[in-house]
Amino acid sequence: MSLRFVVKLQAKLRSSARPDESNLPFEDEGFSSDSMGVLVLLTNDSSYFEPDFMIVQVDEDQNRDVLLVCIEVKKGVVSVQAAGAQLGNYIDVLVTKTAP
Image (cartoon, rainbow, N blue to C red; front, side, top):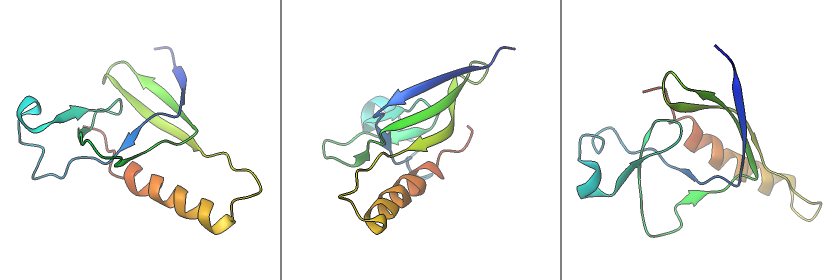
């Protein structure tokens, strides 16, 4: 088995569907599957995040990406607290991405 890694630039990071929503059909309810193999609800609003970079390991056996690193680049004009809050939002979404 060879290991493959991908750097994703500004990938859309969407919240996972709630367990009670995941039984609904994809087509009828606007669901999709993200690259981590998790059901997500697609919405027309801006309810997603775009980290600057995500490094993933491609798991071809499971047909999903496994997140290794999430990177947000900031210039000196942003406070440490604001950057920490943004990373906290990313983490809140990422912890819902468990293996199917």
